[in-house]
Image (tube, rainbow, N blue to C red; front, side):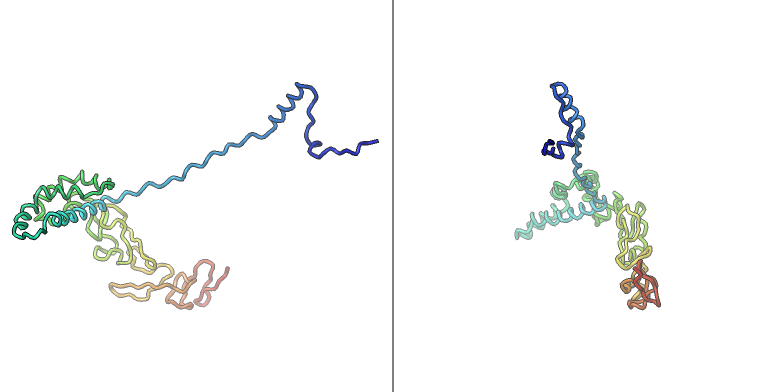
Length: 259
């Protein structure tokens, strides 16, 4: 009579261990060999933060000069104003262009954490001293004398690059007044115009894609937006389209959705 016991499915699938110590050890070893090797997951490296962008040397020089002028105001305010006018006028005349005052100003011209300012001051301290004692009368603008003429870090407004070339559109209205000349006022940059929304062309003197001329005269240009799907147009209406954006087709001066 056959047995009614049924082996569980897993028992039928699993190999039966052989009898005896040595065969049993070999059987256990074979099971471990057959197991898949553990997968070692390497931890993801931490995200790399981009290094901080150093300011252009011209901007550093501008900041140094601005701080210098604030120091001049501070030294007068802190040392004078007590009420004895005659005494103060006599002292001020001696203090105004003194070495003592210059030292006080230079000590506070750079904040402790402004490494670029400290580095520039170290390079230019003798020039600042020369201006203070000998050049103030003939060159009253310290920024122009130090940053542009002596150190050649900056350019006049409306110019850019190593030789201070005029920006597109001219020095009076760089980029037509409708954009930013890259590198303007510094000895770097490409001079390319980064135009405002709606404007385009080398000197931002044209209307960009999706805009039309609403008004123009010798010194003024107004660019207004076309109707939604129009890429080029002659006016603001739906029927003023000359070219359509992707996914639209021009039909009788209107843009029709084809998607």
